[in-house]
Image 1 (spheres, rainbow, N blue to C red):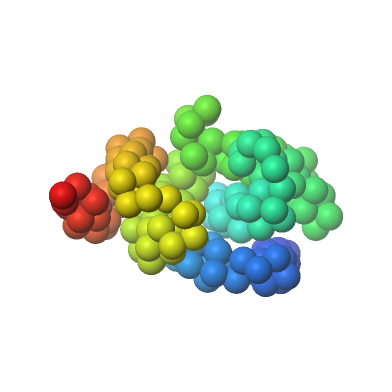
Image 2: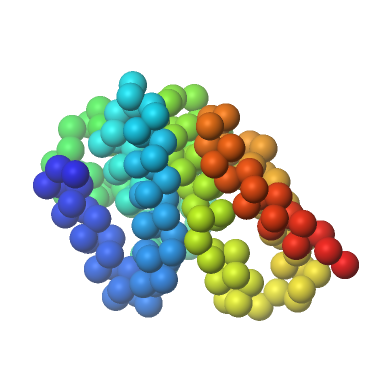
Length: 184
């Protein structure tokens, strides 16, 4: 990891801690980083720095406790950070694009880097206790939680994981979670 990227990771960690989101850093961002590194080891043509910048900056709406659309706010905040760290305009544009498309809602990722971030982020929901943490913090009824999670996991598995090898990595976890969530 280069020096600028290390400093950005430290900045995000400090902001998470300051805003009471140490668990978001630990359980989500670290899982996305691990998944991205696994993906990048199998995607030699991907620009690693762009993907890793996306990993650390895609959650800035949550980290900074801002209101608004996650992609738009995250993209705007990422631009501020990247300018502060003196990244060139081309890099800023690429990182903003992968943040704008990572949830595969309004926009679908078209670049290898954007697909890598979307996949790593979706996979994170299978590689930690994110699902249980979400259940405990959102105050939903059991029925609401099950409906929400089934829709979210189906969207992740079918529309956000762009590489067959990545689907294979989480397939058993997806099936197990879906089994538990659909039990009566």
